[in-house]
Length: 314
Image 1 (spheres, rainbow, N blue to C red):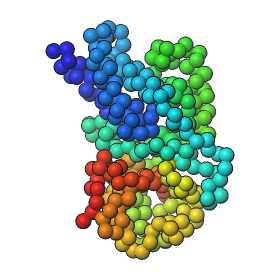
Image 2: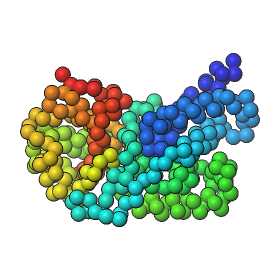
Image 3: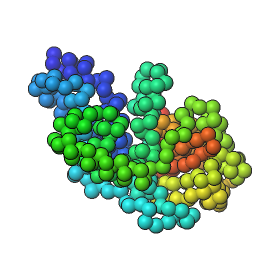
Image 4: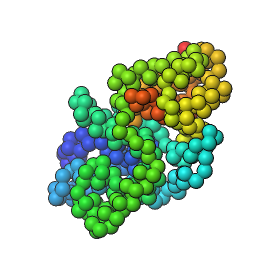
């Protein structure tokens, strides 16, 4: 049957299409819906697919345009940053302007193969800082930058996919790269979650919560560390400000928090639970050899199930 042939050929691209839609939307919920829409549209049109491009390229075209249509229907716009200061006197957090941002479970998008190089490539394309930065681009800029710089499509192929001329693609790409540099911190020295130093710092940070130990926070955080929450006004820059806030407003007494480690956006992360076992949400850490440079906090019990974490602890 034609349907069986389509699914046999197309199903292997589902993970990478989910990563693509997530880059476009910043939301796992939206990305999953749009991948489903992509497969439905592609299946309905499969009889007319003339093999002029690869099936993979054809699916990406459908997915990209589905995302662009969804963004056109949406009134989501990232709140401009860099125009004021956060509570600690530093510049505003880019993530604070992207309230719909959701963390992405590694397991949803990383290849099933154990090839470390393939996993690293996928993770580089879904780092939290990149996803935040992409939300500050116009939908057209976002699509062009992802297709050119993440997927490495030729400009002519991008132009065909988006019904643009090559000159327009180059112009959009130039503006997108400039804007992304303005709102995205460097990710050059970010450690993989499996790196021994990353595991050490994650363990130290979680232990600091469990024991209410300011010294351990100070050892784990970099001097220029940032603590932020996309859905709220939390934004602290600098180790001193972060530790003061954590110890005075968050940590409480020893034993008030329990943490379960996981991986989100190719970065160390953990689910957070209150004393008594009720879930709070999760935090994603950006870890470098010098320490944790960024802690991004996501409140919401519903996030944890997607990561295979329990809704509550006994």
